Image (cartoon, rainbow, N blue to C red; front, side):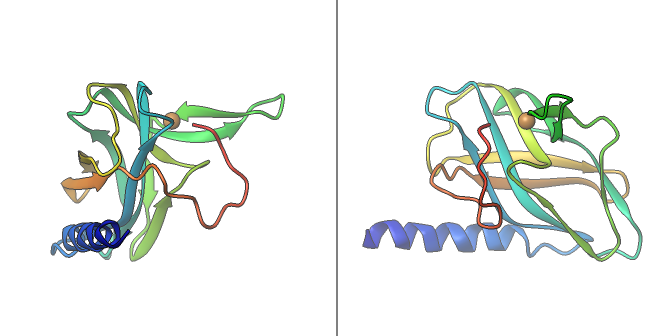
Length: 156
Ligand SMILES: [Cu+2]
């Protein structure tokens, strides 16, 4: 367990350091997961900060890890079941605001994984913003992470 928590601390600083870059956009508290080692799809969650004086918009996402990477959200369908839907018009990140991608809400979706999401694996993702442009991050797979704020669970 000691080694494990040391690695966690290292990962924490690694993730933290990726959020310290100058520029208007910062990403923190990010992680990725899949439903299991054989899953063909996975998702990533994070907090995105827009430090700029103007609103921005996350238009699209890309990763080498999957055949397709999309922005998704969850919508309640007519029969009350939560369904995932692709976001086509992007996600607004307001000026000097923080926007969270969370389980059961907006997320980055990887479809057709080229490699399994092993715990601790690092996933490169490029975010494309309307104003800030390209922003590359590396997100660590955390299969054990629980969503803290939402007590209800969603299968993904
Ligand atoms: Cu999805």
